[in-house]
View: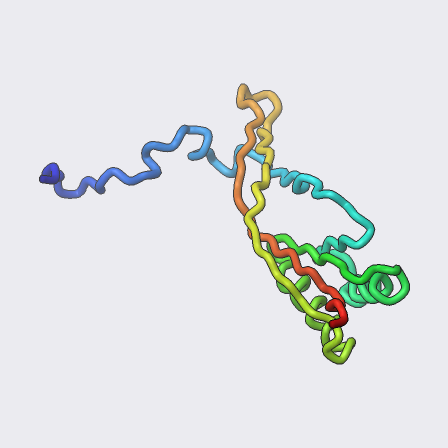
Length: 146
């Protein structure tokens, strides 16, 4: 049986059980997003972001496949850059007239943010919070001849 509720009192929600650090006033803190942890960087890894020009990222991938001596590259995208990573892989495949194949994996990456107090005179201490973000890893490769 459920407990009777008083009229006008909202039911207890899950957010009522969170610590006061989570229910902070956003005006009192500045959010600083840390960079994601570094994944292994091999010569054939390309990490796609939204700041670099799309054509430059595409040209880098083409250079690795054609002149870099690699039979495969791995294109990585995080968050907003997922669409760009997919687009680069599809552009590479289309420009090779179907000679390249794609193998895609998705994952979730844990990111850490720093929350710093706006007023340094306040007694509030800097805090950190974690959040999850989606990632994609696309292997672009020439298939083995049969």
